[in-house]
Length: 367
Image (tube, rainbow, N blue to C red; front, side):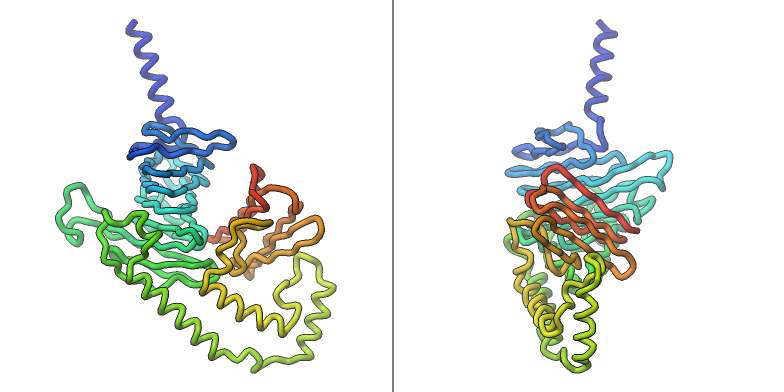
């Protein structure tokens, strides 16, 4: 009897800690875990694995990874675990990649971020967050805009933030720029990967009050920063003289060159000079109004023109290409396929689904 009991306990322990982490907290309804073609109930004690998509409804869960990284997924949120490698005997070999897809997710660094911060990659639909060992929360609204707030790392029962807590540093990065957050409750907002994050501001919130309410009502400090950025963009657009240095003969030469260029090297935004001017203006206006981020269906439901990805469509195929100035990344799919493409260049990852995305995943990485 004692032998049977011991074996039973061993099996329970192995099941509890299988995978790369475990759901250690659960409030109200459990989350659902999409694991390949299987949907699991994310109750307390459930193990999580790489490529799991954790989705909450009227409840929230806390996940503790093997390196003691802690992630809280709040109500009506979705987190995808892209990658996790950790060996306490080889601390510099660890890596972690998370995709905060929607809702509000709070992150607290573990051993991987402390030992090798460059190996931690946190992505949202519009930004990449570089972590230097700290706590922060990210809210992604229905249009993909991201609000990132740096939080103090405080011990249980703390009385004073400045005296008892540690303040880390994070960089919020897009294709157009980056900002650094290094003060408690400092925040920024990003509307697209083609626009820079707003200037950092201090929000008047407590750690306990930062939750899904940000999706419906961003703090007034963030709203003012967004308004200031849009006003600056309008001034820059009005003051720019697009025709000042134009040479129409060079424009015609460029048009002829692009006709004979191969598909991968063709610049689809520079085929017509006057059209290009209108495109620049329309893209800026569209970025301000979030029009390019509101597509929810069609051939490329995740596509954002300001992400830097260029699209070529013919009768049978669709091609997505991106040039970061040093490398070219390109993939071609059937127009009638269902696939998901991840294009990573350096610290930037762009995701696009073809139709519904399906189960086919293609990942292109260029360091």
